[in-house]
Image 1 (tube, helix red, strand yellow):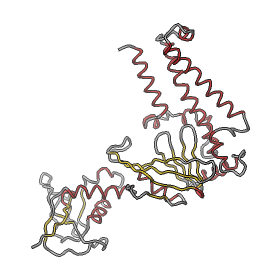
Image 2 (cartoon, rainbow, N blue to C red; image 1 turned 90 degrees about the vertical axis):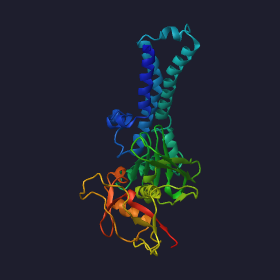
Image 3 (cartoon, rainbow, N blue to C red; image 1 turned 30 degrees about the vertical axis):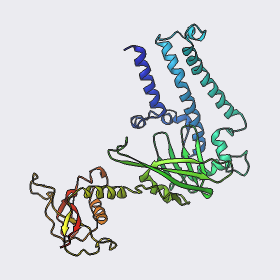
Length: 371
């Protein structure tokens, strides 16, 4: 293959990592935030001013990527830049080259106009978004100062939804941080609606299933705009505890609010595949919750004969059915390493009463016989 192909492949790969940095780039500090940290200043001290500068430098770096590609082609001899510009090469390359040069010039003009027109970046999109919440439409600095003060407090929450997007919730504000702007809503006049959830078998950040929820943030303030927050379902409770407004969950949306909820559902799915335990005895209320009839029995079925008969081997439990499957799942989870949830299903536990060791294959749903 030609050197042109490999150069194009490498440049597009690196550009993608700049626009949407993977975990490895973030860990190595190869992000716009880290590279330009000295110019950006302190996010904790001046949150709004920091993100105005960050959005400006992000926009400029991103718009320079096409120009860098064309310049690289010229440096490595793949195109003659002078011939392209005077129109002696096909129209496609002329359009690509001129666009790559004009877009950065337009963005530079835009940045200069934000900095010089009005005063103190007042025409920047972030300043305009904040001016919605000001009594004087031309004054946004008072709102920025209020947000800066609340961001300095230790009780705020910051949720990284991906490598380029954050959700920040303070006492009074909900803020979505994106590469080029901030979406802002004041909690006092904002409705929150959880309208969708989606589940993925594999995650790029974990080895197991992951579930995301989509929350629509709908400010009622005139001139304000709605925006969406997409976050891991396990972060939902942190968000719910911090916001002052109730989050409305649509009836057709189901999701796991906590890691335990997700484990219980998976535990029940796995147990449903095990053989049933038949019994004719009368079942009593679950001694764990006293809400439902006991419906599981620990019955050794796993064939754990290859292991040495040590303390970790599964043994027979002679206890009568006393637990419902939800309480048994909660008990099972409580005995596991909370730092390694991916190992829970393959781990073992002890009977809550007789301490007989069992695994997931030994948990059986009860089938009441008619005899």
